[in-house]
Image (cartoon, rainbow, N blue to C red; front, side):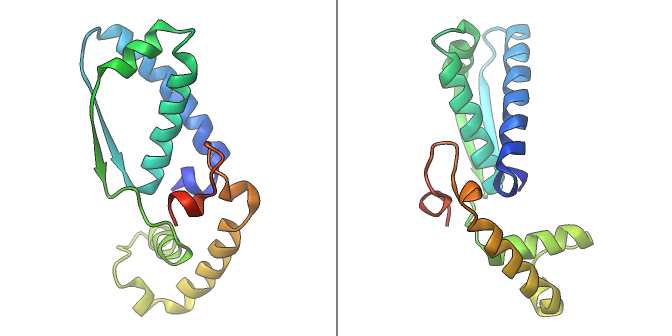
Length: 141
């Protein structure tokens, strides 16, 4: 979720993860790589990782090696439909440590105003822009 709600933080984590991935790949030469993405945040996060690897590839043999060793990608609940409604239920459920299913029926008084705040947040220009420069609405909404 942080990749969607706070893109700069997601991009920083992706850069750190990419650095760690390159180190790990050098320690395990020739090991195949399987990517397992979970939710919309994982989908966006790995998009940033792949973008970083692509940018490094012309100057970094390890980046090219990692990309060539990716044997598959599992899309587990992704890409997610990132809407204010879905995000607000997820945020309220996470804050209360409860499952999101049915939470709007029991706690609509909390979910509805959270959705209004999230909707405004998702409309901010710097949030609506993904790493590729596409509005999130074209990618996920």
